[in-house]
Image 1 (cartoon, helix red, strand yellow):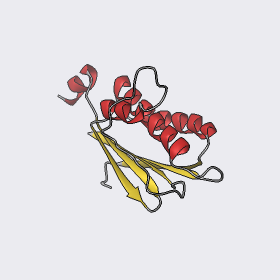
Image 2: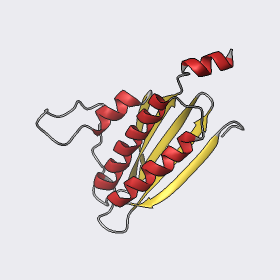
Image 3: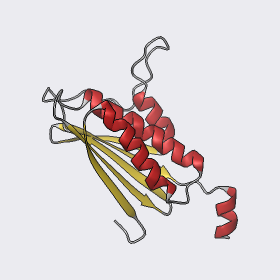
Image 4: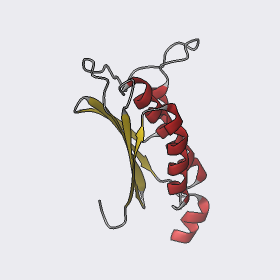
Length: 148
């Protein structure tokens, strides 16, 4: 981490109730930074998708945890979501998969994350899965004038 970076980290129970807390906590962190609302919105939506997937697909049925780390820099942010795994065989995660059929209510998480983030990587960490997303900050008109 460089001197101009701010890191926030959370470890929450792997329940859907935790999703509201994470959204609010990340929104507060983003509000402290000079990000355009569109950038904050895409990071929050991508975080919601990643945390929802970690809770639903990557955590033990009871007593599991999800870790979320957000590193804010002047030029962007890195969001990392890590689950503990379910104890099953290696998870089948394909971040390049296409969305499922329009009738299906499932299978849209990674396509949404890929659309919102500038880069998405998935790695195995212990028994769990770690999703890392990179976001470049796009200066809005006010920031561009101020920086000049």
